[in-house]
Image 1 (cartoon, chains in turn yellow, purple):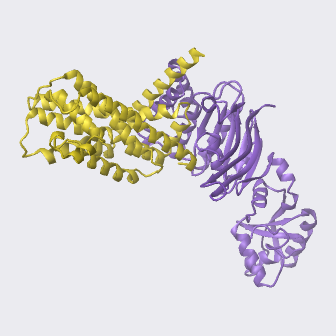
Image 2 (tube, chains in turn brown, orange; image 1 turned 90 degrees about the horizontal axis):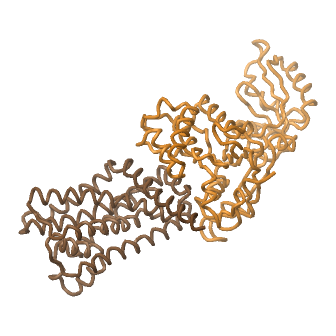
Image 3 (tube, chains in turn red, green; image 1 turned 90 degrees about the vertical axis):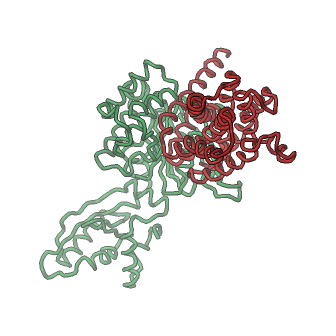
Length: 254
Length: 357
């Protein structure tokens, strides 16, 4: 029995990898992914940072948080509705793997893209702007956890029962923009009014930004362990609505 | 004989049970291991809904599905490992090559590294795609995509294969090649499907395809199984849809406008229940073809028409299907009946059959 479970677990992990690699090969270079996943964070960063007084480390911390957030959350709302429309999602749903395995594979797609783009952002910040990194290991852990957490957030929108990526693109973008303004990215947490700060604590981006501040600048408002724990917890919680919506899709026939 | 599929009281409501749309209405049937089972029905009859429930893609509202001895509600994982699915739209990844599509599916079904390469080569060669293995699927024709889709569905040697409308939209040559593949899949032999041969559940609205391929067919109409048997037994059960097919042409220049009145006149012959124009021929439905033949000849002589061809036909599976589902044979029959009505004749298309209007 134990051997059976071990085998099954190994199979499911391999399937997570298989789904992820396939999606990376098929979808990373789609125009929709390039626009929402690769270019958006940079556009947003430069829109709100140009001509503002900001040090290199502060800028890198902000760019990293935005990159993780925007890029990781871009894949889910784009890929799943597209696959539903093309009919290829049925192949995945009919394959011998659990729904959680499929969702973890899809989460990994956004996370890997986010990690890769973050690495580029970091390299630009260090090489071009001369930023230094205060806590590299915290940075690596934060990027990893944040990427998975935000990718799981994007997956919620991808799980909405629809065949049209356009149906979920707008609400997904609206949420991301909304969170951007209440999460201490542009206005530091310490400068926020109590009500705004209470709202900020509900946003996962708040913890990612604070973590990046710790990792890059060496200072943040919250305990970095709390940031890590919040990102981990939210990442797990974000998977639950996706599971529920997939179950609903199965009842509705999407 | 063991059963590959056992369906008991399967029901699907879209929306709330009792208030929503009843797509599948308490159906029960079995599919024997090793057979090609056709699931026929008009559009919206519940074919695809049933098939999606059998393949775990759709949750039933009620009923029980057992596949190869495993209850689908309790052991979907095992069932999924033993089944393959070819959906109506070829579910191939256009951005990947044929080889990569096969490798992806093989990995998904946990086919061993060595075996999957051998299997992929074997399937690509068999399906005539080996030379195109490194070409991206976006450059494939519809027929090539279809073949690849089938290859992907059987790379793990499933005991049961679900095929949803495998040939619509394909040219005649490709459609025939796909049907040949289905026969070979079903036949015993290790080359394609493993030693036992694959049980095939074929969802189609192409009656002739089902007639050619299936050991048994079920006809579903408005969510209910209307008939289930071998094609030949179904045909025998509907002897009243026998027909005489006749092609007539003027025997000289003195018979103008013969085609306009011919349908009405033929439909008015004693014993004819329906007349249908089929190209340059007329098909006259009757319960007694032998009694009708001399009348057709007499009519031709009296009208100075030459009989180009004259055949008696048993009921086709299409006739049985249309009879069961209450559809008309073709629009021409409808037109014929209108003319008859206009001429004050009560027989013909609205005659004894009663179906089709």
